[in-house]
Image: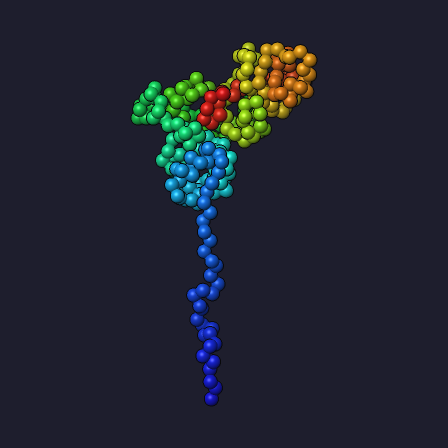
Length: 244
């Protein structure tokens, strides 16, 4: 006769604590970016997993938006809808309701703005649109002073003169040489490359081409279609939210 050890565990019974990992606390969201702070406020305690489920945007991308701001117009619209706030409030802290000249939403006209990839630009044109985002025409006019002929793109590099970061979404419209005026911020093509700079009708005395490139300036004398000459593609008229 064998006596069983009463301290031995029954192999068919799994202790409740066995194999369980300690529950991880959800880390509180924080940021110094004003857009990110408003997004955290709009979440009202909900986490990025919830927002990702509502918008289809990866939570890693949303985390980047909280840290650095929202860089894509279409994603800004989806986020605004999910948190039941306006895009303008997310981006600037102001609300459309504050604009006395805006008509009621039920009577507003809308414009579908295409977005293009600058890497697809060539002598044939801009290529196919990546997507389209709807904006109120009255808001576009109030903010950018125009509502027609606009398109969106994401910058391929920083433009330090206007504090626009690489990847940021900007509003543009096509521009020809004769349309340029002093101070216009434009996208130029030069030898197949894309360059963002401020246009000037004259160059400063003693400033070399290298100096102007460093200062992000293109002068009238550098425009053309030949090698080493700048050709304007578009004028940048605003960020996703905000006139330039």
